[in-house]
Amino acid sequence: MLVTYTTNRLSLNILHPSMASMVLDFYIENKFFLEPHEPARTKNFYTFEYQRSNLSCEYNAFIRQSYIRYWISLKSCPDKLIGTVCFSNILKEPFTSCIIGYKLGEQYCSKGYMQEALAKLIPTICKELSIHRIEAMVMPRNKPSINLLNRLHFIEEGYLHSFAQINGLWEDHILYTYINPDIV
Image (cartoon, rainbow, N blue to C red; front, side, top):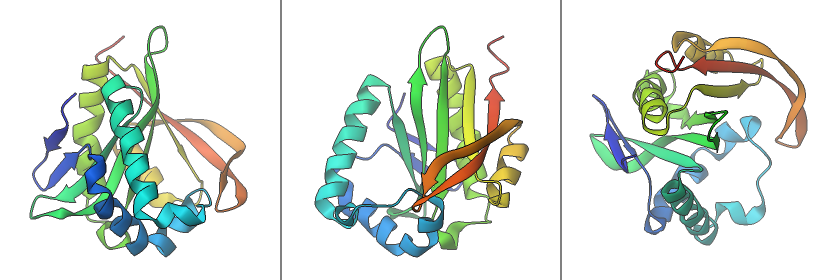
């Protein structure tokens, strides 16, 4: 796995802990937009120290290839983060699977950025880690994310009742799965 990938408009990067201020800026700027879709955050989440520590853990997990988070920036503005894509719960044989999660800042939604990022990262992760199955869990009211998964050939597999605590409430989710066509 490389630390950086690029697409036509985007740069996708594993961030070093020294870049924590960029991550903190992203979360502060998008706090009220992201809160309805994410777990409740502790007070220290919105601190430089927390983000630096988190990036350190993520960087070490990337080295072990157990958890991989790419931060998204525009090529035209590389010092501003616009979103992130995370591959977690990476399992080796016999499962060769993982879970994908992603988010964009509010002003960058509906511009095709996430589809562009995922169209690059999904085949890359599948090839580099021999991943057969990628799972995505989406709240039923998140129509833009559902539409994105459909465009990327994810298949709806089922309904997960009271699956995750989001912003303090237990929320149902729909399970979507991408099966790598190159591993049969």
